[in-house]
Structures are given as C-alpha cells and as structure tokens.
Length: 253
Image 1 (cartoon, rainbow, N blue to C red):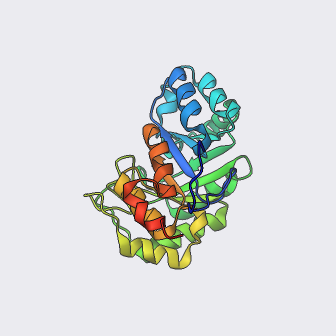
Image 2: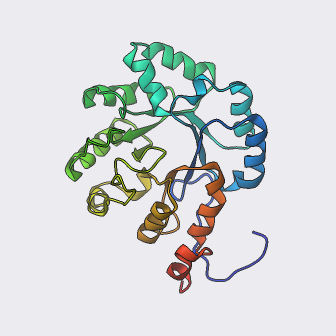
C-alpha cells in the first residue's frame, strides 16, 4: 500500500484459500496482459480464460507464460471442457491440458446435459492430473434449481475432488445465483451457506452491486469470480472499505 490507514479489514495473503479474486480474461492481448499484471497482478489470485476463448486466442503459449511468470495461476473456462466432452474428445482434452502445462482446469455442465454422476467421474479422473475447479448451475435462465439441489451438487463435486466449486452467474451476472435483473437470490445463498463451507465456494459476481452484497454478507475475504479486467482494483477497494459502497460497513472495525 502507498500509505497507512487505520482500521482496515485484514486481507488474507497469497496464496489464498479465502479472499480470492478470479479475473476473467475475455481476450486480452499480450501487451494488455503485461499492463494488467503491472497494475492488478498483486490483487489477482487466479485467471480464467473465459469460456473457449483459448481456442482462438493468438500467442496462447506466450500469454500463459506471462501469467505464470507473474505467479498467477491460469486455467481454461469450463465451456471448453464441455466442447470437448460433447464431441467425445475427453482424451484430447487431457492432452490439451498437458500440451499447455495447465495446473488447473474447470469442469462444468452449464451448456450441456450430462448425468451428475458422470460429471463427478470426470472430476475424480482429472484431479489426478490437475487441480479441479467445478462449476454448479446452468447458463440457461429457465433452469432454476432448488437450494437443496445446489447443496447436493456442490457436496458431491467437493467429495469427488474439486478444490473449489463455482456458483454460476455467467459473465453477465444474470443467471444461476442471480435473477435475470442481476439481483442476488438471497434465500438460495443463505441455504447454500448452511451446508457448504464458505471458503470452498467462488461466487461469480461480475457486477459491482453483487460484489458489494457478498462483501457485506461474508466480509472482505469472500471468494469472488468473473471479475472484469478493469474491476480488480475497484474490487480491492470495496474489500477494504475505502469505496463509498462499503465505506460504512468497515469503518468501526
């Protein structure tokens, strides 16, 4: 920090298990990645190359190296996993992870329908190769799961070997744990937290109001994902209570 302020919430240190910020890279150039790391690398815990953008990204090896050299883990979005699976190319997916020296991968079923037992089998197999992050929830706005179902799915995926489970919201923040207006499904979140440990969940929260809501509910060290490139530093100020939206929430610490 550039100067001292009293009574700020204590932030966890890297490598974090809680208080993680997952940035979504939707197609940054190498120069943009360099600029991002210079400004926001210290506040970024992991980077997702959104959905299947890695398939069409130029200079992919060089981009991955930039993140790794900065000490920031990076992984391919879950839609890429689904694109391989729907085509019967699981072995090709594993070879792709090896080809690009990936240490993390995302297993999701937001765009395809597969039996949940089969999804958990993929998690169990892949955890022997990489650290698995799995995503729960559909990208289809018409598919609304009851809270007990979210809990069952999350519990099963953690038991299968997921390091973290992501609560789906898409990059727009209007499905899954949110209504189509972007409003948090508060009862759903409350129910999930009665059974699933907070530190094992990454809540996708691309909108500022969603970030504020989770910080006020769970504190500065809540895991948040799908954060836009330009929102990483603004999010850190929300976590520290030095932006108006959370200013009063932390001032009396």
